[in-house]
Image 1: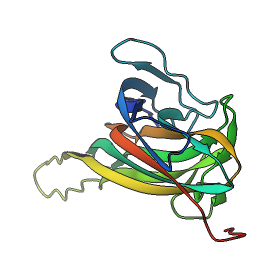
Image 2: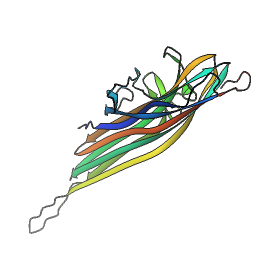
Image 3: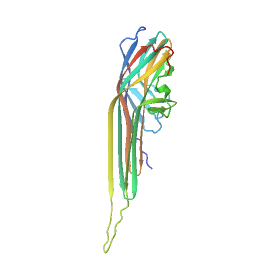
Image 4: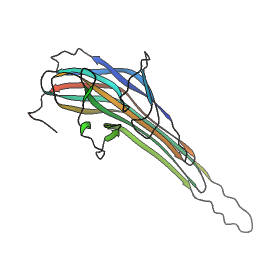
Length: 256
């Protein structure tokens, strides 16, 4: 068994708020500036050692204890017991490459994986987490689209497992009056690269009076494993994005 740990390079985004945010506002939006991060492959999502910084200033970007990276935030003031509708859009990308080389009588397997995950959290004026938005707040390990990360969950925006297996049987030669030989070598490679844009809606129901910050957080994972002879690479990325937050009043005593 031979494991290859490839390094996934990806871009992510932090907020650059668009427009003024006043006490009477019922909606707010945010866009972002580029930040660079590196992550070493691991099969344990949310525990990979990541290092993030602003590309232009070099200022470090602080990550959450469970390895989420804040990419956008918007501040809103709630004057009554109202709810927040949060809509996000972000570009994601996955890259996986697997190559196997096998001789007679052996089997080789190469696997490359990658995933991108998102959640929205509500912060108070001191930066403490007040709530995690629904539907992520209702996630369990049995729900499709819910990914366990650290002590919580994120919604799966992109996920891929690419496995390439190659096997060659032994070469059997029937020899009569003369001698003979038999030799086979086969090499197969598979590369997949995907870039796509995703939107997802989050809900904070029945938020109390106060000034809050809605923060969009992202997490990634990548892994590469080889059994036999070959190579594998797994990488994940997220980039350009935006977020809008609407203050709404739901029906009386609303709950999920």
